[in-house]
Length: 272
Image 1: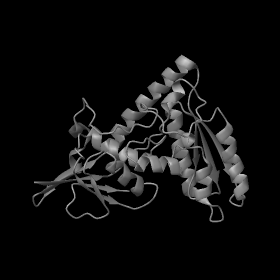
Image 2 (image 1 turned 180 degrees about the horizontal axis):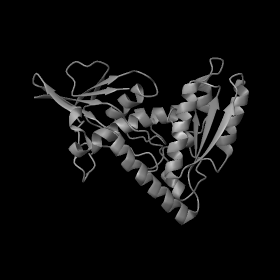
Image 3 (image 1 turned 60 degrees about the vertical axis):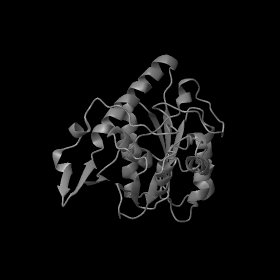
Image 4 (image 1 turned 90 degrees about the vertical axis):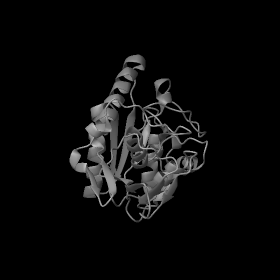
């Protein structure tokens, strides 16, 4: 029986560098060491994590179906997202207790786009629930590129800020690539800096951060015990912030994972 796997939703997690436990002043552009839950986690070979909860208990019966000899399963991300948030909150509580500090995220918002404000609200709410501090800098849509660069540079130099997000898209008169390249790689929690994307593409190297949508897709597969080695995967979407990093993430497993942008004869389909 041919099986395929589809995503209905996936969770967002904000990764934090493990070395934050020991020091909050890490400024090396070299590849970071392996990190735990608060930081990048990119093992050489992915092995599904043990989960005491049966995947089927996480998945409503209505999300599984069979038709004409084909079966498919939609993975529900919310229960797993809840588990992850609880663990992140516990890590941050321990951090506060042991060193008296906690992660702090800086968000830069340009203009009055309703969708951007909604995304920022969701991120702020998630941070608040797990104990991550936040600071938001709002600039008018008419701001100059230099004004935006000054704000980002200020957060780069602020030792009390451990992650930076510049909400995209930016107004057309601003160079997104230039702005994203200015963010320090070790504070680039979106994982879009060339160093982070480049390290993600090269086997054996580890980025400081992995784009959250891509990382969550892989995490969903692992937590449901889905074997991805040797599979043919269709990634529906070619965006540089989701489709591309997901393809790279699948291919650095050191196994024969074939990532494609079509749905023919695939074992796993991911919509992004």
